[in-house]
Image (tube, rainbow, N blue to C red; front, side, top):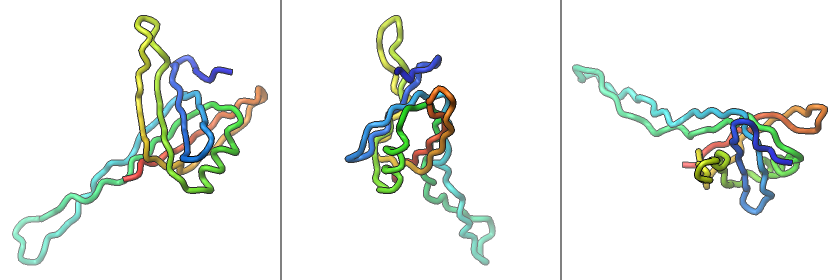
Length: 132
């Protein structure tokens, strides 16, 4: 069964040494990469002084549909191993090229949840964090 939906976006998660999981992506969001401002002002300063801190890890949350991936995702979470996440669009009808939207070769599966509809397809969310 093809999981490519109307938007044509699919994702694959390949944990190191694990089973490939393919998702049909209904939406995704990104957060992270923010750099906090650290106040280093001292009593003799005549102006506020700050340094820029380290960036927070980037997280990608995918709203997905998938088949029978529960065991592979659970195994990936339990082993705390890194893996590769690739999100891409279906080939263009005019030129047949595939547009890759996101590639993370050093990522962790942080969380996932799902519900099962009567058609047996799992719908849920999976969150991945880029390692720094």
